[in-house]
Length: 241
Image 1 (cartoon, rainbow, N blue to C red):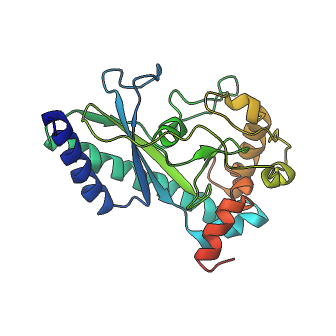
Image 2: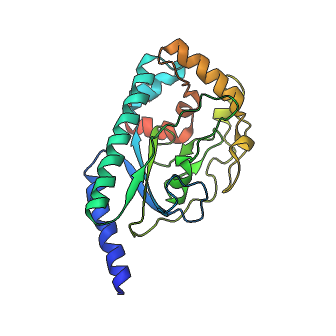
Image 3: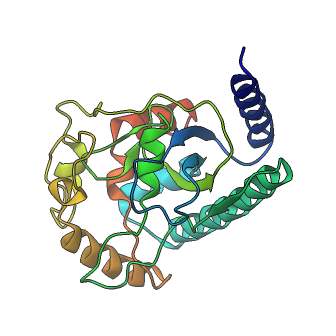
């Protein structure tokens, strides 16, 4: 085994042990060198991490988002930021650089409805899941019932196998339910633009309306999360469905 391979294996194992003892439900590693819009251009590797949403609260989305879901959304985002901070500090203690951006980036400008760096990009490259017809990350273990964040680093580790195709099949549950009709029903493939999957303006306007009605002052909906068959499998395992 070469020295680089030995170091890569050791750091991957140390990261697995550390992250496994934190708040993450799922995580993976990826090479981001081919992504041009990295927020830290000098950091070419990524760690994608997810925290699952409370299954009972996810089930409540069948009736539409309420205060309980918006609190869960914000609390999980806060936990993700803490998680990313801990992992970044752990990497720095190993002698490497690391940084992260918030799990949710402000998208209040209706003329610019996209994030500078979509965390879903790192998640698919890490092998955690694919992009559903609802334009959200879908995982086999939790469906879309999770929030994700990315740590950017120059630490070497063993990367996952990127997911390059959709496992949504002919399912149209999210399309049929979507209140504003924003889901186009197109099956994702790697490199596809979000606009081909989703009418982002319709989604934004409806989510903003629902968010203000629920009380948080920011856009939330989540109806497409709960009807996803992969999410339903998670809810059944948890005994709430």
